[in-house]
Length: 340
Length: 232
Image 1 (cartoon, chains in turn orange, blue):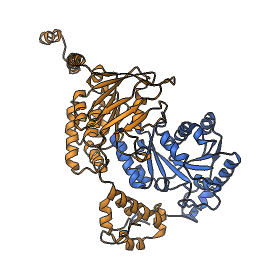
Image 2 (cartoon, each protein chain N blue to C red; image 1 turned 120 degrees about the horizontal axis):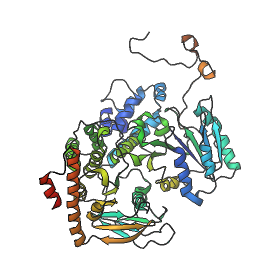
Image 3 (cartoon, rainbow over the protein chains, first blue to last red; image 1 turned 180 degrees about the vertical axis):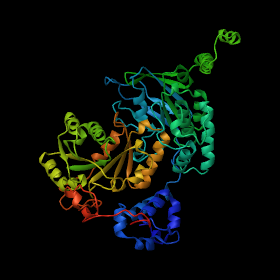
Image 4 (cartoon, helix red, strand yellow; image 1 turned 60 degrees about the horizontal axis):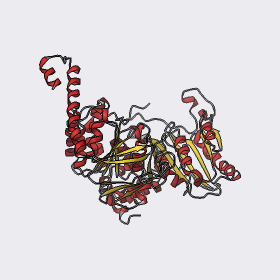
């Protein structure tokens, strides 16, 4: 038992954690008694009613005590700074040795390419669960060059890794602003309103189709959802490692999205089939038969190609946009630009 | 023999979680057996059999599934001993959010799914609040932000538990859960063990087949709703 818990007032306890406020209300739905101390309050409880609410004095005390401890020790999501992530080679789908380890420093973007089914998602999954030779690939993940603390692995949501993937959706029936505020509270953000406004502005920049704080999450288009997820991951999730799984068709500004993530001192891994995304990374990892077959540094000449590809892509976008709004592409001025 | 109770609302993926975890453990788990508690019917026993896990199914039928569970669990343990299992998994569907099949001294796991809405962790009673491990499934199809909010709410509802994300299709998370399964306490018998929380009570004519509605038929353990001043 925390020594001074019995003498603390209900008001003080509630202020520590919304979970405490909730359980106190559950145990005693009558008038709030913020000035009453915890021990005297326990005396007033009706045991039958408590049982009806699925509680007992014993588990109520344990519950409050655990949350008090957590709110006092758990300030901030991570208590160490990430400098590097390493992936120690495992085996391919046939059991042969994987040829390469992978070293990634903070602020790097690594793209993962390979045919469908080659094992790109497996590699991301290995990182997500901080594999220690115990996944089908037998790879090992090191954090800052050392084996991760077991509590990071087998503990609860450690906030080290955030994921954005093609098949993720918003399923909550809430407005964008309302939901982001909820997320900011969970992340114990100091200036919740400010961060929420920033995420919405940033999401709009990435999406190119406007949404507001009032827009219901469930009405966002695919592109807007992806944009909001990325903005939220960059600004609100404190996770230093971000895994992105095939978001090429989402219609978001890919360059901006990556710049945004890297500016936050994050390690970004993207599995992609999209040539523009694949060339945007500092290096790309080629996966074949479930193992890393090659690691290619993006060369200066490839970067020059990327500029050309982006120009083509911009043209495509322009044509798409014209057709979308009912224009034609045979008007002379446009044709001249198009043929250039 | 190690025992694990796995509970959770219907269709959250309990069977997938269990089978993927057993598969991930390979030989580390030794000889594994399972008991599936359900109310009316189950097809899950076929899934266990296909995975080569000896399975006994208990259907509660017209009885309250939780009362049925607690009256049969010690027999299940005896069956487990006779079958020389190293690990026995008892899977039960928490059909009312108030119940909890978790037993003191036995590893208790509650499975919930991330699609069920952020307030779900608060609505589930002792089944989630008193579990040692809370497994969250289907997180791969919701946004990172919602997953974080969901696990935060699980944490608020059960601050003691270990919270794990689990993908029932790929088995991601099986390594972690397996690690907990094989370090579960050894239990020789459950005679004299205690449930972590009392079962919902009901002793009334409806328990034994009454179907008529009306005050005349409400005897025994009856509780009435309060209409705040306008009540009759």
